[in-house]
Image 1 (cartoon, rainbow, N blue to C red):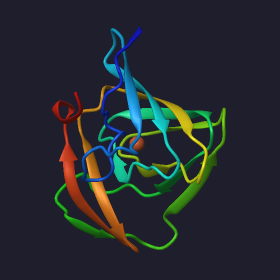
Image 2 (cartoon, rainbow, N blue to C red):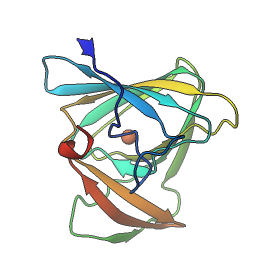
Image 3 (spheres, protein in one colour):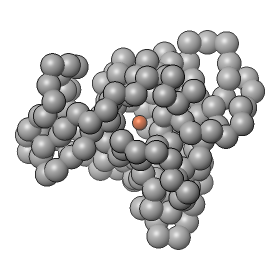
Length: 156
Ligand SMILES: [Fe+2]
């Protein structure tokens, strides 16, 4: 495996927007499998916005600093909807200090944040198979709205 130069990546962009000067920076790790890995730097106060990873399974770990993950403990319909009303009790929050990580299955919906006001974080993310697309959502209370579908050509 080899590291590519830093570039905007699938987890490197605010929801529905372009990379910002304060945005995260990521480096893809190349290999010879139908998978992908990213090393991501998180300035204080940055986050991914709500999104999923389609059919890919994945895992990530905080290598430095602490990340927060907000996730939905619910399987969403894979298509055919624009807004969805979430039921109470589906929200899960976990903190991932240095050395802690988590794995997730297909269609996992989450947002990842560095909530620290003054500490950078670094994390490593891996996906199998390579991400076919990412659906990005906005959220207002219990209402989840599909905003954008990104495909690999959007981040490569
Ligand atoms: Fe993600």
